[in-house]
Structures are given as structure tokens and as C-alpha cells.
Length: 215
Image 1 (tube, one colour):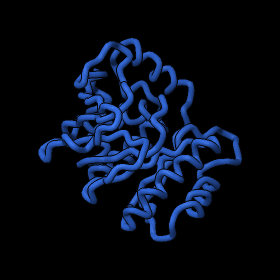
Image 2: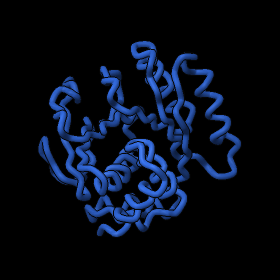
Image 3: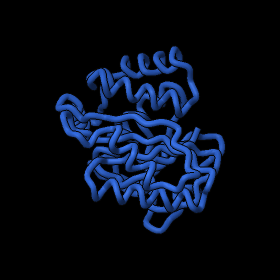
Image 4: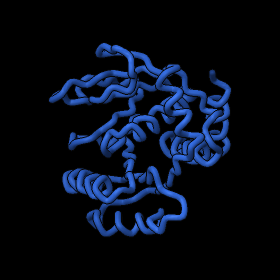
């Protein structure tokens, strides 16, 4: 299964994709395509980071031009490209006004070119005790998108200190221990993996458990 992740490629978005790729790799082999480097070491066009295979896309190059029909890809997308109907589309929407409006504008471009677009929205970096939460943001998205765009589901992610520690430590150790993430973020990651691969709850739980056992 191929997935396009729409939205600005921030450090938090890249970490989220890395976590999903790490978990998904326990179900299928995953390659991540991106114009921004995920590794902090010297890299080439193809490199490995935290046990995941990455392909660096050159500026101006279509990231989908070299994909193989026999492989599974996660594509980090910051600008409009033609996404095949076979791809699932996940939108990473951060909560600051500038990033939110930029993300809605980007998804709107896809929606007008692809009226059958079906998206799954992840609200990233929601703050606790802030009135700008999932319910408010969902209304913002529904008003900002064309009426024919279908929202398949939403999830919110709070980046607690525990998860930021894992993110920063992984940058130095080149290792990503999924079991060290907080329970809420692991529950959301399981939901997203379930959506990506169309798994039932029991199957998604088993995939997450395998990922937690990985070193």
C-alpha cells in the first residue's frame, strides 16, 4: 500500500512518518521518499535511517517517477504532484494558523484536480487545555475544503515531553524504540496503521506489538 503524506515537511511531521514507517515495516517492507533528509548524517540518494530505507528526491524531480509496482512507499509531499487513485492520502495538519492555512490551501489544490480525493487528517502538535482543539480544527477544515472532498477520519496527536525525548534521542542514536513512546501516541499510530492497511483492530494491535519488541 502506498501513502502520500501532505503538508509542510517539519521535523515533527518527519518524525511521525518515521514512526509510522517503523511500525508498518512489521507488516510490509516500506520505503520513504522525501525531498528533505530524515537522517542527520552524511547521506546519498539511497540511505538507511532507524532501520527504514529512504530515497532522497532531487529538486524538480517527480517523486513518483521511479516507484516500483512491487514495493510499498510513504511519500512526504509538500507541493502539488499527481497522486494515483491507488494511493491513500494522509494530511498532517499542524495547529499554528500559518501552517494550518498553508496545509488547507495545498489540499485544496489536490481536491480541485482530483475531485474523488479521500483524505485522513492528523492534527499534529495540539496543545492541552487550548480551545483550539480537534473539534474546532475539524470545522475549520470542513469550511476550507471543497464540499465534494471526503474526510475519511481524523486523529489528534499531543507531542508530550516523553515523545519529544524519543524524537531527539533517535536523531543521535539512529534507533527508534517504539515502546518508549507514550500510550496515547501509540494508540493513534495504531489507528493510522489500521487505516493504511485496512486491518481489523486485532491485526493492527499485533503489528504494533511486533514494532514495540523491535530494538
